[in-house]
Amino acid sequence: MATLHATAEPAQDPAYAIAMAQFNAVADRLDLEDGLRALLGASKRELTTHFPVKMDDGSIRVFTGYRIQHNLARGPAKGGIRYHPQVSLGEVRALAMWMTWKCAVVNIPYGGAKGGVACDPKNLSLGELERLTRRYATEISILIGPESDIPAPDVNTNARIMAWIMDTYSMNVGYSVPGVVTGKPVDLGGSQGREEATGRGVAIVAREAMRLLGKPLEGARVIIQGFGNVGSNAGRILNEMGATVIGVSDSSGGVYNPDGLKPSEMEEFRAAGGRFCDYPTHKCITNAQLLELPCDILIPAALENQITAKNAPHIRAPLIVEGANGPTTPEADAILAERGILVVPDILANAGGVTVSYFEWVQGLERYFWDFSEVTTKLERVMTQAFTEVAALSQREGVTLRDAALMLGVQRVAEAIRLRGVYP
Ligand code: NAD
Image (cartoon, rainbow, N blue to C red):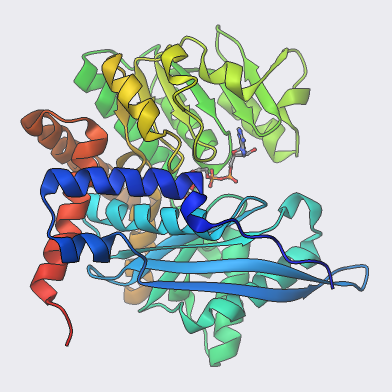
C-alpha cells in the first residue's frame, strides 16, 4: 500500500488560524461567556478516516478523508465536501466553523459541517473517482443522513459526485434517500438553480454593496480569481446585470483584458478542459498579478489565504466580494479596512449556495418542486435581507461588514444554545 497523506498539526493550518482569530475577536466584542466561547471555539465531532481505494492499475492506495460537524444548535449539520491535495484536518475544521456562522447569518435552520478528501482529482480516472467517493461516503455514513448531516458540493466536487454519495447511502440503508445530499442532479431530486446559486448570491451581494457605495453596477469592471462553479456563475450573472468581467483565473494562471472578456467564452474554454494559462489570444498572467489589477469589484473565488498582509497594500479594487471561504487573512482585513476598501465577507457573500441547498432539502422533504424563478426569487429575498441586516449592524456598531456578519452569526448560535440549555 502507498504511504498515507501526512496531516499537519491542525492548529498550524492557516485557514484554521484565520477562523479562530476571527472567532476570538468577535467573542471579545460580544463579551461571550467563557463556557460558550469554549464550546463555539471547538468542533462538536471530528471524523478522520484512512480508507483504501482500488486503482485502475490493480494497486491499492490509502486516502485520508474527514467529516467535521462544528455545531448543531440550530439544526442538522450542513456543509460541502472538498477534494483537493491540501485538504487537512485544520482546513476542514475551519470550513465547518464558517458554515455554522454562515447558516446563522442567512437564518436557515442548520448547523455547520464540512468534509474533504486529500486527493488530486485531476490525477484520478472516472472509475477511481467513483470508487473513492463511494468508499468515503460509506466511511462517513455513521454521521451523514437527511436529518443529521447533509453534504453538498465544494471545490472539485459536483452534482455527479453528490449522486454517487446519495446512491451509496441509499444502497447501504436499502431504500432511496435523496435528502442525504444537496446539489444533486435535477433529475434526481436536485433543485433548479442550485448549481449557479453560490455565484448568483455573490452577484446579488456585489450589486447591493455597489449600491451601498453609491456606485453604478452598469459598466463596473470585475476581476474573478478562480473561475470554477462559484466564479464562473458570479461572472456570468454580473455580466447579465450590466457589469464587465475583465479578468479571470484558475490554478494555472489568469487572463486579463481591460476591454472586457466574454464569460460565456471563458466558461466554454473551461468546460472543454482548458487551462487559462494556455488561453489563446491573451497573454497569461499569474494569480498574484491578477489580484492587484485595477478594477471596481474583486472576487476571490478559489481558496483560502489569497489576500494577505503582503498583497493587501497593493489591491486596487474599492470592493472585494468573497466568493471563496476564508480568502482574506485577519492582517489583510485590517489593512483593507484602513485603506477604505469594502469587503463583503464569505459567510455572507457565498451563502447563496447553502440557501438553495436548504431550498432543495425542503423541496425533497415535501416531494414538491419549485420552478427556477421561484427559487431565484426566494434566494434574492434571503440574500438581500441578510445583506441589509449585516450592513445595518455594521453601521450601528461602527464595525466592518465581516465583524458585523460574525457578530450576527455567532450571536444567533449562542442564543440557540442558551435556549436549549446544557444537557443533561
Ligand atoms: P471549483 O472546484 O468549481 O472551482 C475552483 C476554482 O479555483 C477552479 O477554477 C480552480 O482552478 C481555481 N483554483 C484552485 N486553486 C487556485 C489557486 N491557487 N489560485 C487560483 N485559482 C485556483 O470550486 P467552487 O465550488 O467554485 O469553490 C470555490 C470557492 O468557493 C471555495 O472556497 C469554496 O469553499 C467556496 N464555496 C463554494 C460553494 C459551492 O456551492 N460550490 C459554496 C460556498 C463557498
